[in-house]
Length: 149
Image: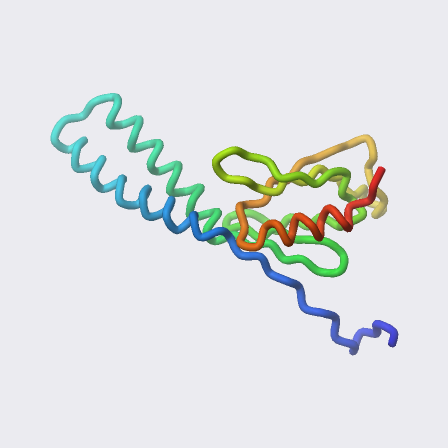
């Protein structure tokens, strides 16, 4: 069967963020009011630094919590709040690995597309995916579909 405009294509597989983002978000969200309360009793540099750290941690945890990765027959798309979707086709992949000590994430090295649709082999970019549920399955798919150079 040919793929015509009226023929439905397979829907993408969606990989959701790991549940630990909920824990990190909760810890950061609970820390912020406590630190503000401490700073209201007396401002000190350490309290301000911890508050800034907790706000930054909350931002990155919520961003990870609301992210997802869609995988289809052509490649993957990383969807994150406050950012445009980042799509990488399988043919663009140069290397796929799992990196990190505390939180393992999939790291993609890929060649961007030129305006004419060809690969720019002189440029190599990286994309770190958030920690995902069923991440090992996605890693196997990406490593199998990545062109071996």
